[in-house]
Length: 141
Image 1: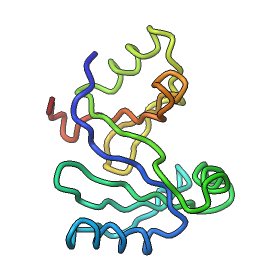
Image 2 (image 1 turned 60 degrees about the vertical axis):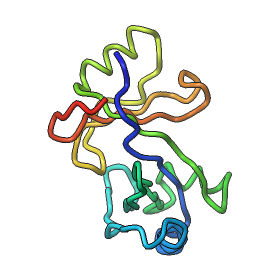
Image 3 (image 1 turned 30 degrees about the vertical axis):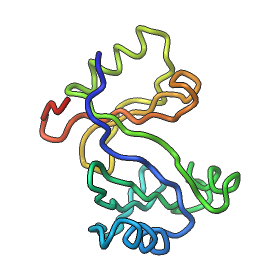
């Protein structure tokens, strides 16, 4: 298993609107998608198009959101995760598990509309890592 390209960097924020404006300014009027809710994951997200990847802004939908806990420890927000693409989500999950890495839950549909799962940060050099099936099955190494 070789991870494909970095799809996005997840950034937790207490305010998508404020963070979107910051990135829009820093990236020279970068395109910022409309925020949308992912109630099954307890978050509101939007994507900022950077020149070579995307930044996923993540805001909690309530006190039960996993992002709520992250922001309690990091009130200003910050990097939450990295997301890499793979051609086959189920093969990737099996590969990580065969090596004793902790996959956090079953594959589910993520913000890009493709299957995802997360790998525990302790198994990925201290970084929470999202594994995402490449959109439309594209393999983009």
